[in-house]
Each structure stands twice: as structure tokens, then as C-alpha cells.
Amino acid sequence: MDLQLKGKNAIVTGGSKGIGRSIALNLADEGVNVAICARGEDALKKTEKELIEKGLKVIALTCDVGNTQQLDDFLDQVKDQFGTIDILVNNVSALSLGDDFSDWETSINVDLLGSVRGTRKVIPWMLEAGSGNILFISSGSGLEAGSPPAYAAAKAALISYSKTMAIQLAPKNIRVNTLAPGSVEFPDGLWELTKTQNPPLYEWALNAIPSGRLGTPDEIGKVATFIVSPCASWVVGTCLAVDGGQHKANL
View 1: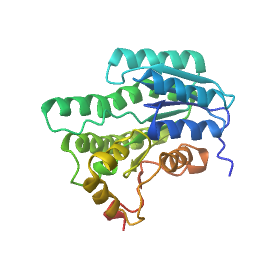
View 2: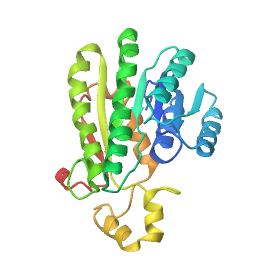
View 3: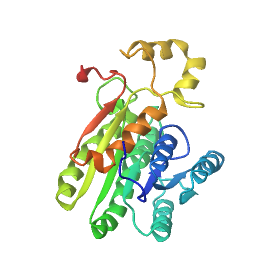
């Protein structure tokens, strides 16, 4: 299927590893020019090289999305080089899994406010262009109880914010949606570490998934790429769980 994305310009925050990396690579496979940011330079450079090998325009810059000035600078540089921004994927997460007040501050500042700031920055550019797509990467943790409270609250807030923005922006030809991935395993990711450091917790997560396995970043990346494509033009304000049946309200 041709997703009709060739020549579009996309931004993926937290795009160096895991789900963000897979979203960036899948977009590039469809002919999309991609800008990514992350805090860790080594992983960022590795993903940048993979994207460049696909023969497209690529921007990869270190950026702490929780730092307003750094985020503004990153987005301005992308706008200057790409000219237009067709797609924004708010993927970044601090993955702050504690319950100290500092964990709450980090989760709200990075996972929620970082995405809000980025969205507010690009909306005028999309309005000027006459169209756009904004996708938030939330989590199954934002759909139901049982996850670390600070992380879950920030992810739930993203879902609510996305729906509100979808209503406001749909009449202006800007689509807004959310993905809520379930437990996804990848090298150096949370669940790979859990598998070795806390096997009972890993088995608990595995047994909670009717499909019998954890997900892969590529499975999320493919769905994300479809959602931001013209082929999903009637999908507006949706929070789509991509989780092998892990979120029981879907069943």
C-alpha cells in the first residue's frame, strides 16, 4: 500500500531508540524527511546514520525536550531547514517510574508539557501550510490503573489533551491522534532489563498479554506511520491501543 507520504517532513521527539527510532525509520521507508532529537548523542548518531542511508533529508540534534529553550531551538532549526512541518510525533518520555515528587515533576515536565510545548510551537506552521498531523505516543499505562502513578498520570493527560486538540484542529485540516502502546521490548529498553533483573515482573507482564508475547518497536512504528498518513484521513481524536490485547477494555 502506498501511504502517500513521499516528500513529507516529520519531527519525532525521542527518536533515537526504541519506539521513536522505529517510527522515524518507518516514516523514512515511506519517503518522509525526518528530524529526530534525543538527549543521548551516541544512539542519536547511530539512528541518524540509518536514516541517511535511506537517501532522504535527515536532521538529528541533541535536545532535552524538558528544557523549553532547547526544544524551541530544535524545532526552529528543523523549520528553517525543512521549510514546512507536515507531521509531529510527540514520542519522548522520561520514563520516570518512581513516586517521589521529583518523579512527578519530571513526568509532567517531559512527558506532558514537553509534548504540549512542541505541539503549540508547530500548530501555527501547520495552519499556515493548510494541513498537518500530530501524533502523541501515550501508553497503556494511561488507560487503566496499576502502573507507576506519576508516569501513568502524565500519559493519561496526554490522551485527554490529544482529544481536546483534535476537536479544535480538525476543522482546520490538522488531524490529532494518540497511540497507547503496551509492553514493548527492545535492546537496552525497560522490559529487556526487567527480563534479567526482575524475571517475576517480566513473567507477570507476559502473562497479562493474550497474544502471549511483548510487542516490538516496529509494530508500533508501522501503526504510527499509517495513522499520520492520508490513508487514515478519517481517523481523528482516536486513542488506539497497540498492545496484543493487554488493555482489557478492548476485549
